Image (cartoon, rainbow, N blue to C red):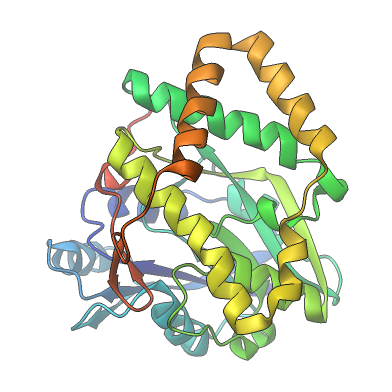
Length: 304
């Protein structure tokens, strides 16, 4: 039976991390066993550490690392990978929630051969709570329609960084430059250099979309900036990973325009604004490798 180390970097996640820990506890596994859940708190000051320590009293597998200062997600992932003791590292974001009790099984069982070094979960938006969030969910669904089958699912856009599984030996070989704003693009490219990537579309993790324009800009600008940041570390030739056939894009847009014409039209307008709006230097940057937080996406996921 293979063992799993679940690692979670967290920055001020008090409002939702209980959902994530509880959704992990509900997982039903065959042929795999969770041996530890390690949460690295990245200078949290909102009560996240206190909440986690309370949860650890009833969950013996839960271990909490209290980082005194905020150093960024990539710094904490480097730390978590090295601490992992299981055969497989499962990385999840603290502000998400595993959708079903079978999610973890559907993720880790895809590591079916020694050359598969990265399996990505399928992050999907929780139901919208306001009109703006409905637009964001529609744009996400449109983009999912475009990317999910591109190159049989083996493309850089199918790993968003919210949930992944990898052999521990591979995880320990990865060292993120701590100046990166996000981990997903770097990890995908690193995996493709040494082995195979698999997109596990049935392993669904839920997330909260932005509920306002400022938070949309914060998230989207970070994603665009991370491409440049990764290229600075790995070379401009990696930018080819971000190329996608125009026909796939047009087909997805056409499909969703017929399905949800108003929301799709508004969402596309926001995407045009995103790419044309002048950006003040370091407007979203807190420190090197640390991006401004999108606060509305940190709310508790409520499916009732």
